[in-house]
Amino acid sequence: MDAAQLRAMQAPIKDKYKGQPETALITLKAKGTLDDTNIACKVETGRALAVAGLHPATGGSGMELCSGDMLLEALVACAGVTIKAVSTALAIPVKAGTVSAEGDLDFRGTLGVAKDAPVGFREIRLQFALDTDATQDQLDQLLKLTERYCVVYQTIAKGPSVNISLQRM
Image 1 (cartoon, rainbow, N blue to C red):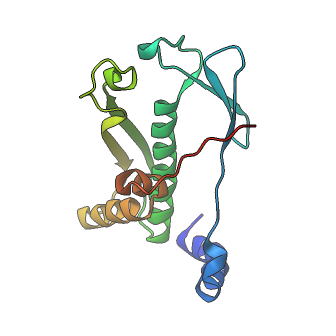
Image 2: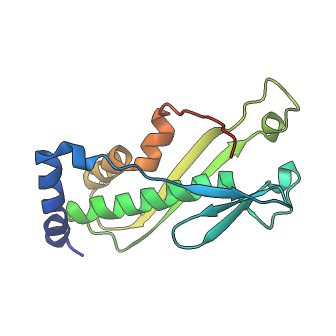
């Protein structure tokens, strides 16, 4: 896909959202079912069933997906799609590339071992490696716009309000 094809594909969508901003508000959903025998949650991904469980550092077997890994995977996926879309839209040639994310966790927090240990990632590092002949100015613009438009990155970085509730079935 080139820049013209991307613009042509997105133009009617952008026009609709400009004229009818309420149609741009979409609620994404995720749903999981608690496993009745293991400490696990079966998450419906839309493509397959993913089973999330405890990380081995908290007593898990390592057979299930770790939700922390899943968060980093979502970041990598979103950032990868975003950088590809931005490079295409700006006609910045990218021959190949990789996206990686890593994050530091202190499992004492989630296990309640140390009250001063945070629960959650202390730091997340997102890195791109690109095979490109782009100028440094183009690369700077590419990174700036990828950061601006990556939904998962912005969600993690800005920390939206989250409401939590519990009800009986």
